Length: 149
Image (cartoon, rainbow, N blue to C red):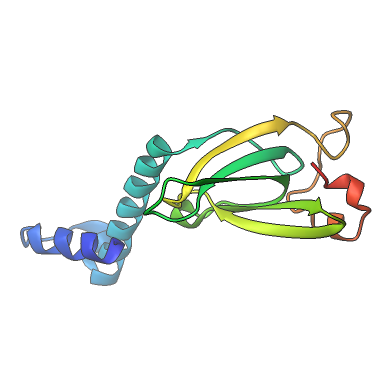
């Protein structure tokens, strides 16, 4: 998708003399890719209903099973990691069902993501203390009661 947008932008651009930092074609292309990435993130943010959440919060995620059907799958869990990389941003949720722990990585700007709803802030400490880590991988070794929503 980005490649087609890039080729379209390069073909419609009139040949001009670049001044300053963007004289080199590789830097010009990288700058254009950054702009296209920012536009796609803005479009995706307008389309999805994603609430504010942080690691340690309990969330409920609604995902479409596939693009052709309108069936929605609801998944609950505790956010144990967040990754901010523009269009490749994602987060990992963890939950226990039937004494079995599972984790799922969800991409924020995926077309299959319908919504993310915050259930409870600071779920791990029952709202008493703030979470002081960005990645809560240590919860994998803890008892299931810490990540069961």
